Length: 562
Ligand code: ADP
Ligand code: ZN
Image 1 (spheres, rainbow, N blue to C red):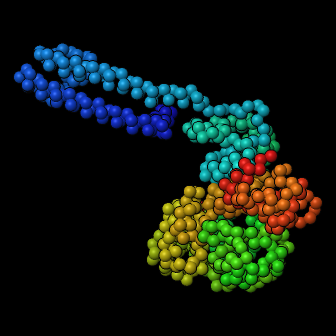
Image 2 (spheres, rainbow, N blue to C red):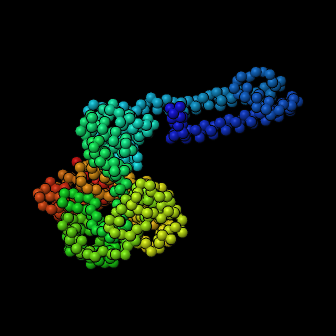
Image 3 (spheres, rainbow, N blue to C red):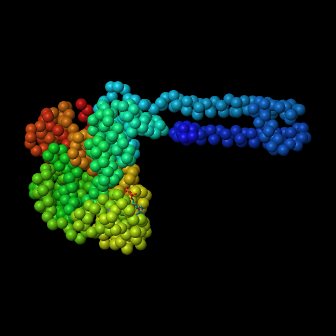
């Protein structure tokens, strides 16, 4: 039954769906034609022969004539009548017996047979396949991951137990193996032993099963996402090399961006000794100063490589004013970040955060704030049976009364964490309306909604998909730490040979790709050159650490192809 439904579903997708419209249009035309003939038939019979037939008889006569069946039980007996009958029969031949079957075959039957023949899901990869990333479980996180992998030209294969999904993904041009992820045969078909990495993104029990099966076959490294942080150890026991409690990480990340306390120098990424960190401007002595006045570089050696404000990433100039709502993105060494902590000194004390939603992410955000002694209030429409640590206000956060009674007017920060993006957008908009100064950090479940959350008034949006995908790409590339931001990447490339000996200015990297150089890695053991001046000469063996949007990263790869 399921397969029949699946076959039927074909006719409601893509081109077939458009063709159904054409068919409906054509059938309406035929019906109208039959009706017209039936009416004419009645009229002519009465006028020419003086016989009175009902409309139903008219339809019956028209259909027998058009289909060339011609029972002959009702006939005209005059020349004009014969002429009419001939016209009806001829148009029947054209519209009913030729065009209709032709349309049915060319619009539906032929494409359907073709797709049946063309798409037989792959069950096994060619024997020479190796170094590919195997992805189990395709959702928004792994979809974003595939985009990263495509950008970096890393081959990947998705294993899917769902025939429909396998076909749909293959239609998109992705490489898919059709099979049950926990089945050794399917794993062998996906050449698990030759794969570069395994990404397990199923439910916790399925991931465990997958790890055990894969371990019985090979030593390929496995990275798995876990729902329950308590399952991390079990997954490691089952053979996973990394287990990532994504929701916990997201909760911490949201919380660290919502408070100014203890959020100092949140390290995002590192390339050797170079670290990329971010810190809210609020709570530092830099609020309201220009970048030149703040003297971050002179006082700490750190370079301010970017500013985040309301979802916009900008490269600051000397006269850019540091607004309390912004986050500074800094590049430098661990010692320099420590020096910064000394400069920023005392943290702001008055801070109160509202957390909407006490699911796993909301709970993780609450724990983060608790550890930093930031007062917070949790609001959820139901109590969380898995959490014994927090007491939430029970109420629907979409009600302005609940928000007001929880103190949204006085709160400094708001973390919006429900699992429904429409609710999150609504909550962001409503809260921004009540308290224009509050710092709003929101969770986006789908990447498409990031923009809308910013439009609704969020200061920072964190999407599950891009955070998850960033963590996984970093693991695949063998990096320890995590770069977590929306729409901006810091990435490393070997110096393209064509640029050797040129100065940064002459390399025209920024005009040609939009990416900026954050730092230059030197091959000897020296510290990287952070934000090098334009006249710096690019020498053989250097590594480029660049910053840019994912699109700019793509342009860079295309422009400076080896
Ligand atoms: P996750 O574990 O990914 O955080 P959950 O579905 O467990 O996701 O968490 C979402 C939480 O948000 C749930 O506890 C749910 O009760 C809560 N929630 C959803 N809508 C509202 C709302 N309008 N008001 C308050 N809480 C809400
Ligand atoms: Zn909790």
